[in-house]
Length: 342
Ligand code: SAM
Ligand code: SF4
Image (cartoon, rainbow, N blue to C red):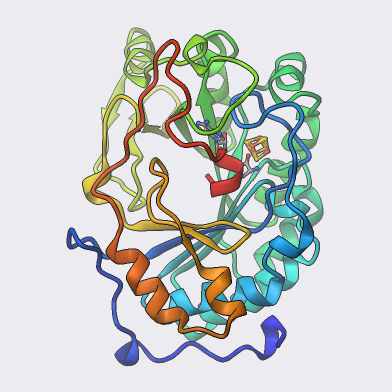
């Protein structure tokens, strides 16, 4: 079965909602389509990573099947991520196939999070497939800092990718992880740059996921202190705007743009969590910050009842994450963000 001859989504009336044990409706699935990446961001990956053998990774057809089953169970938003999603061979076939759920009205949004290095090649195809907005991760505009943070990346390619996406009519949100030494001082410049291009910007606190080559405590900075610093020279007005996610938005009056803060470490927002994450091996994680895992690949490869397995997994979604950061405290979860799909 190819993504194109996969069954259409069942009508809404037939679709039972996914509700977890705490009454939260799960309407958002993030799918990591590969664990591989062309960059090695220092806070995300170790320099030398061992990537998964192909047999362990879901095929494009399997990814479509699992994602479409979630849509059939009431998921309204799909985000494709990774690793770097644009590195996955056949990625546009997957997007093209999944876009049938946009056309049927079963899905409100099909989107992706990318590092942007290959966006110039893909932007027009994404827009043609019905993708409307994307997140691009960019932690510094300075070529030297970007190269060091990503262990070899070229910021010009990312900027070119963002410009191509904007030219193709995509809305772009820029995501940056705030790092005390590496980019905290440059954050205002990054915000101004994003807002000048009409892009929203979101700042993220570094999360203790997976072993990396350094101690994250050295680079952790609370967004509360970043916000206090910005407030000393900008006027930040709280907004009621939400994308249904954990980001809390303000308007920067001086730039006219929106700025979001994702603060998993300093402020827990789990009571509103509506999302689950599928890895490229078909493991379902119902919480970013817990070790819980359900093996959906085993279910589909054995011809088992996928819907029942998904319902069972959602029933175990924990109340909240358990992230802790501090000197000598290891990662709160052993898997990397690139495995879970950020
Ligand atoms: N490669 C794509 C990218 O960089 O946008 C998609 C995958 S990446 C894992 C998704 C997001 O997770 C990126 O914005 C990245 O900055 C963020 N991220 C990775 N590791 C993180 C960590 N330990 N704490 C907080 N954010 C992290
Ligand atoms: Fe790759 Fe994204 Fe992780 Fe950077 S954050 S190493 S781009 S997966």
